[in-house]
Amino acid sequence: MDDSAAYGDYYQWGRAKDGHQSSTSSGTQTPSSGIVSGNSEFIYGRGDWTTADSSGALRIAAWADGGKNDICPAGFSVPTKVDLDAETSNITDLSSAASSFLRIPASGFRDNSSNSSRLLNQGDAALLWARNIVLGRSDYSHVLSIKPPRGFSGGAVIGEYQRTSGLNVRCIRDKI
Image (cartoon, rainbow, N blue to C red; front, side):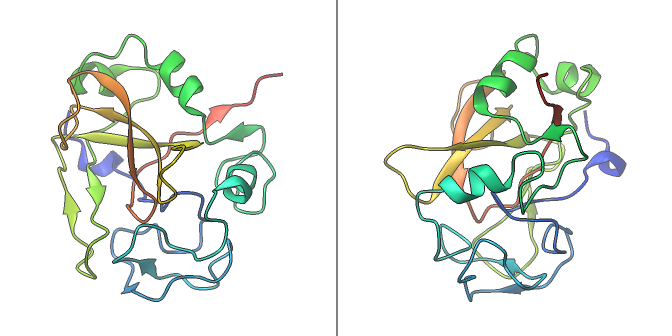
């Protein structure tokens, strides 16, 4: 389902809500030296937006409820890949994603290769960050991909994207 009014923001993995997530924010090729970027620019042209925390461990904690880069309301967190897999087990395509309780639109993603603020696959793919790293690939983290643009199979599957890519996030309530 293509609902451009519901596309929302495009976050770089593990990054705070600092303005970079806007689809029209300016860009820079200069990476951040810490996990709090200190600017509102979308960092492009590399695999990760920061030179710190190549393992991703600090940003996993920072994206948890109450973490320093927490982008979710209190009591909610960016989900793990296990959470996303469990919450999307009935999603088979973009239509079922849009009508699910998560209301996932086909918002595509923000390109990380240039300063063009280019949004790709809008109306054709939904991609959501998970709060997990990809072991052995220091610039990649896990995503939920629905009708994916880069060769994954159909339906809702867990894949991986470079951390500088701009993807959507759906916060889920923390388990009590």
